[in-house]
Image (tube, rainbow, N blue to C red):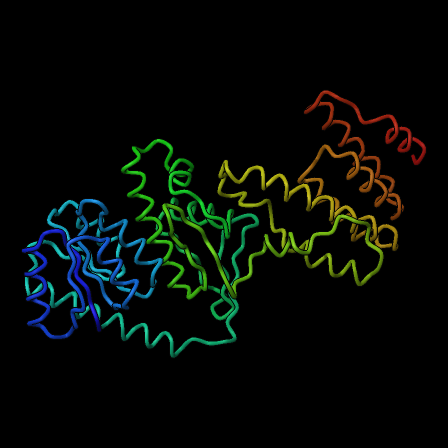
Length: 374
């Protein structure tokens, strides 16, 4: 395996180089005193491992690691620091290990053993991968991952912030988001330097989780911006938008096709997470769902299926309890079944709700229609 070393302190760089040369397990293909020079090397020649100092001027190790991930996500990073207070943070940020200065041969040996173990593990995972696997991301009601090969597998976010940053990038999927914009939305009360460090840590945890799930989802970084892209993964919100229709239903085949789309809506968009930035999209999708479901209920009533229509409309009324259109169709469902007791009770309950909650009465058109029916 090839490695490059990046450290702005020449004595430390030479010391690490001597230890690695003596060990003999890695081929050192470059040693650099700045992250910029190390990145230029990686643009021209591939390396398997980068030993990267955290505290460097011009560009620190955490920022450099983001650029390395853009060049080649398979490159392993081992962080190096002279300050013990950064050790825990460095350990959380990398997929392999961290080293405290001065580096000893014994500690370096443990790191190299960990590297070898990780390589063997990756090879085994690649061999056991199956093509029949289907992966999905769910955004309705709550953020979840689904894996058909392991249906009982549950998503375990390292932190709630990791979940929120992933949801934010997914919300803006395919679009570049400025690092400062993400920080302002997720850590509005933090000092800028601390917030950016938290973002780097969080992005690492997201990438690690995606790798654990084996999802073809990338969190990319370029020019101080992030974006999320994916392939071979379905997203229920995207499928719903693609299949949405607001026009009247004409045939049973069309009704069945739309019912599959409506079944994707398990609840409001990211409803259980209460993200303020998701609220406009939540309302937009909810309105779209209600409109499409109403068209299906109208078709069910027109094709003599009032029981099916009633079940659908009752669930819609939980979403929009004040809607006169929904109430009218619910009443028609009761009337088509000859259930005039249910008809009267439902209308009285609707009137009481409008009066107590909004201080208004039903419109004159629906009220006169109800009186004629009764």
